[in-house]
Amino acid sequence: MLSNLLGKELMQADANLQENIRNVKANGIVSSRHATTPISMKLMRSVSGLCCEECNVPDDDTERLHRYDLDALRRQNSSTSPLVLAPMSAPNNVKRVEQIITDYIAACRFYGCGDRINAGVLTTIRFSLPSLRLSGGFHDADMLALSEIMFRHANNALSFIHRLDFSLSSKEGHLHGRAGFRSHGALALAKILQCSDNIKEVNVKRNRIGSFGASALFLACSSNPTLEILGLEACRIGERGALAFAEIMSSNSESGLRQVDLSGNYIGFKGAFAIEECMQMRRQKGLPEIHVDVESNLVFAEVMNGVTHGVGMILALVASVLLSRQVENKSHRHVISCGVYSASLMVLYLSSTLFHSLFALRSIRWILRSLDKSAIYILISGTYTPFLQIVLANDPLFSTYLLAFLWICCVLGIWVEAFQTEWKYRGHFSLLMYLSMGWSALTFLPTVITRLPPRPLIYLVLGGVSYTAGVPFFVRNNNLDHAIWHVFVLAGSIFHWWVIYRYVAPAELGYATG
Image (tube, rainbow, N blue to C red; front, side, top):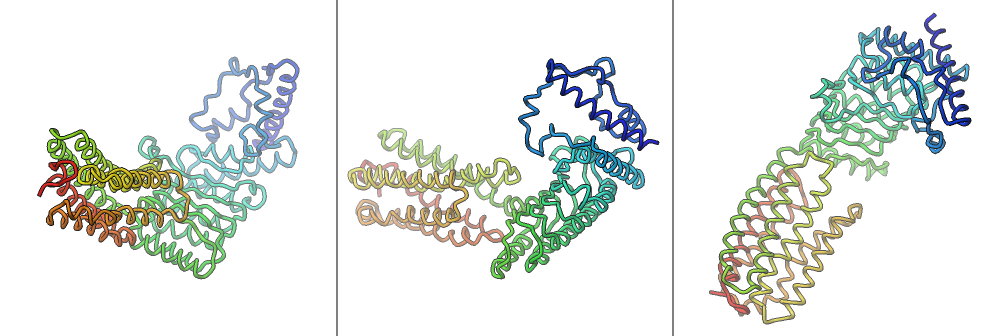
């Protein structure tokens, strides 16, 4: 009785829609004769909670649509548009949709979640949407209920579903108690992926599935040739989950995966290293490449990176104050060149501290990364400025042309870091530029030797050696290598700052004090 009533009401609703559209063509006003809440909606809401809690259906007297925008409807030609309705009025579709909805409601009741039937699932089925996006909370039992209809209809009646989005926003769990599903829900999802031939993307962001749930998903993906994108950001898969991924995917040729997001999962160095080795093995075997995002996983390392250059930022502030006092009675060339150097120091340490301290903010991480890399160019050019403008002030070849060349290289490097983010040789280019600009001091070393006493020359060389000695750690970037690189940068900065503060800033133009 209920199913017959539902089918008749759905067919009547589509007939009413067609009549409304005809009225729009005639006079631009939707008829209010059928603008009442359907009996099926009232019945299903009271019996099974069909409508979500956010739904606010007006009373019969006020439910009316005015000035229906038919032009906007015509512009929505894509099958993914929410304004494109599924052909419910076709007799075969009525029974098919009715049966799937009935199965889903029955499964929800069977698994004890009949009081929270998900409107997102019903909307996807009703309008044949290619993306299943949930509304409200969705837990392990809800996944079991969904799996029942997917087992039966994923490759036939529900073959239009190509994307499953179970992602949670960062605040949902705290504000609404929507903790999402855990490992058992992930196991049910894995069973769905094993039987589906049409799903191409799955997003499980912020559902705490753990290593067990992640391993189940990886095993399902290993035999699924159609699934291409898997999003597991902040799912707490840990080191075990990363090792399971590396073991399963290292030699797998059946999987269709091309993009996996494992960011923010506490996989540690061991897990990250295992994934890197897995990708190398796949390349050696000629298997299709899988892009794996492992950002924001090395929490302790990022904390150490932030602490090391946080200390550098404090020292840079103190050093800037001391240096400004040293040149307060000097020429404008002293003030400007030393000011540029102090600013470059603070830019480097501030950008680096922000980049490593806010590593979890992925929305701005690429901006902070560009600033961090660009600040290295700024520091190199800024360090040269006092030497070339004060010690070599009487040599235009160095004080003007070489300095201009260095700042042009700085601008070029910043442009590459900011706008050529997809260039595959960007890392090699940056490293080559850092070393070339840093050791361009060799071009004026013979002249500087005649104007600087031996001790500052020793400090100057020690600073350059400190920067260069840290490069292998910068390149290898394993375990705490980046923090070690920061220590070398800090040491090089201290050596160079002391030379500028003690010997360059007090000097007259063209000479240095002994």
